[in-house]
Length: 183
Image (tube, one colour):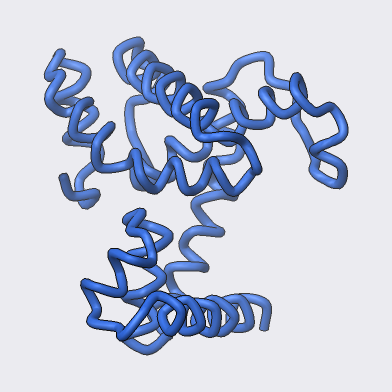
């Protein structure tokens, strides 16, 4: 599934096309799990949260609360998932979120919509800076962070001699991206 026309997908989902939801589920699963595991939660919790996130996404679309996406479906799913992760962390480890601002949610859809613009602007900035990187760096970061490939898979796909060489290259590329965003 391409992310170029998410609103067409929303309309199909709204009309009951379950293949759209399945496609969104499959195409975003790996990147969402990578994102979720970055918060220090275990694989089972990450999978549960992804399931809950997909259900919330579907409910938002079918109920009419979400009529238009101004970002990629993956971005929207991560926005929902982030708050579900924070809820889990608050329950499991009350001190795990030190230094992070947590917004109490009374209406999850409202919270996602409030932060969607800020999140989308941040993603646009990252995308713009990513385009300025060299082709190889851009390809490595996109494969790892956006498409959810493992380092082993990327090493094979991009013909690196081994995973350690690729890991070092990814680290340099990520530092270069961070530096360009912060400057």
